[in-house]
Image (cartoon, rainbow, N blue to C red):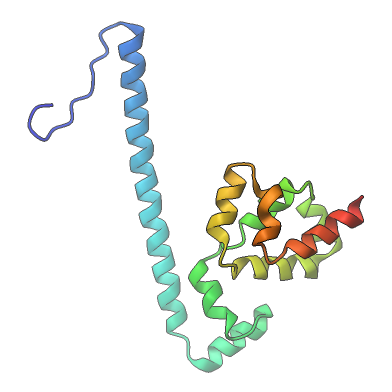
Length: 157
């Protein structure tokens, strides 16, 4: 390295150096893209929170009624963002449950489970278990939807 400038290995024609150069470049590009996506997500969340904060109590109550949640739950849902229940279909897949089929048959139940998932305080553990293939073994320990998911699995058999 010369000064504070990052110098990439030059592709000298040997496969090993060229491969490492391409991997380093790809990793740097992915990290930069990941940072950009994180910043854009933060900005979107910030804008949503401020938009929500601009609503008066009557508007918040009307919004809560329109989407069928309590006024107390509404700020939690806004704070967690639109992907707050993203773990639910992944967990259902890990438990060999077809989320789309269940949604078609039990739309209200899926909506309730999604709301429960959105307000869950164990989302980090859930994502970690899903990422490591451990969700089916451990989700009953922390998932507020565990009993319902278990019943859905039992009715499927």
